[in-house]
Every structure is written in structure tokens, then in C-alpha cells.
Image 1 (cartoon, one colour):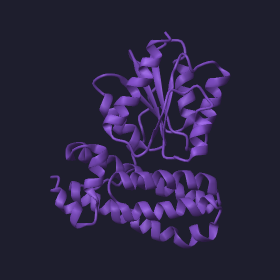
Image 2: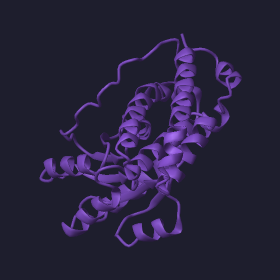
Image 3: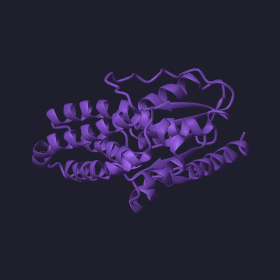
Image 4: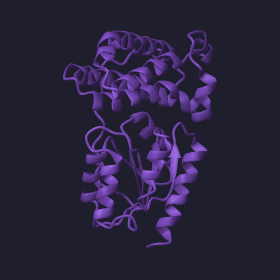
Length: 264
């Protein structure tokens, strides 16, 4: 049985800040279950990146952990992940090595609070479902955070088919498989992802003339002027900065789909 939100508040969780994104406790409760699934897998991959000194992908993944923690009000974890992000971007392996155990401990603390709040324990990391078959009008959401993907998916479940991809490579695979059925009517694309990032996807769209067929809007936590200016060098529709709420997501999807309708 789900506990009252006062349990979270008493454990230092900034629930009120989270509700700026999720809107109500029902949505928060449904989404926080993804946090239990996502975080252990992120910690496992962060350990692997640390062990091979892959600071580039470490920075990208710990950025995602930071966002997830902040979404659900775990501010201490969010701040620690932010410090790891900054230091790994500076290629400071010493900092990452010295502070990794503390990051893991804080993440496990957040998981324990979440498990107690929900009254259950999730110990097995679930693999995301493979999604390649498109039905009717479809939106493709590309983000390395399952929290973000599932949040957007819940918003549009009754309106559109929502396909999700965890990185640019998976996104391009879905697009290629569905190139001839004209069902994908818009894409929300994160820029900062491991393997194939958002800019590589934008390059593919430009080189293959896809922007008119599948309009693209950016969803990103990278709010620097240089990054945004670089994104607008491509014929994208709009940029939505994280964190965002349901109203923001609906607005940018509507804007993106209007662009599609005027070009079909």
C-alpha cells in the first residue's frame, strides 16, 4: 500500500518541487516506479564507465541520473550527481574514483526510501520492451531516461502511439524500419545521450532530407546558449528545456504536429 506523501517529506524528499513536473501525486506515484527500475541499471553502467575511464559517457549518464533524482525530489542525490557530471566533463578521474562510493550510497538511500514509500522492493532490472511496429499516428521520443520517456508516453497514451528510444542509434533503427509507412508524425529528441547523440541524429535527418517528413523538436537539459544555437542550425521546430511539466510537453508536441500537418 502506498504511504502518504508525508513519509517522503519526512525523509527529505522535495515532493512539492516534483509536483511542478508531475502535477499530482497519482502521476508521481505511477512514475516513481520507473525510478526503482532505472537507477540500479544506471549505477551498473556508471561503474563500468568508471572502470574503463570513459569519462565522456560517464558524464552523459550521470547527467541523466541527476535529472531523474531532481524530478522526484531527491535533491542531495541530484547535487552529488551534478558534481560528478561537472568533474567527469573536466576529465577529473581522481574525483570520480574518490567519490563514486558516496554517490552509490546516496542513490541506494533514495531507492530504499522509494521502496518503503511504495511498500515493495524491485530487485530485478527490467528490460525495455522492443517497439518497432507503428500504429496510426506515432510520436517518437528519444531520451536516455526511461523516466522522461514514460512520462511523455503516459501523457499521450490515449491520443497517439508513442515509441521510445534510449539513444540515437535505437531511434535511427526505428525510423529506418518505419520509413515507408509514414506513421511517425513527429519526434522529441534529447541531445545528450551515449553512443549516438542527438546531433548525430540531426545530421542523419539533414543528410537524408527527413525534417519535412518527420518534424523534430528538442527536449534537453543542456541549456547553454551555444548548444541551443547549434541545435537551431538545423530546421527543428522548437526546443524545450528540462525540467518541464505536462503542459509544456503538450504544447511542444502540438506545435511539432502542426508543422507536420502543414507539410504533408
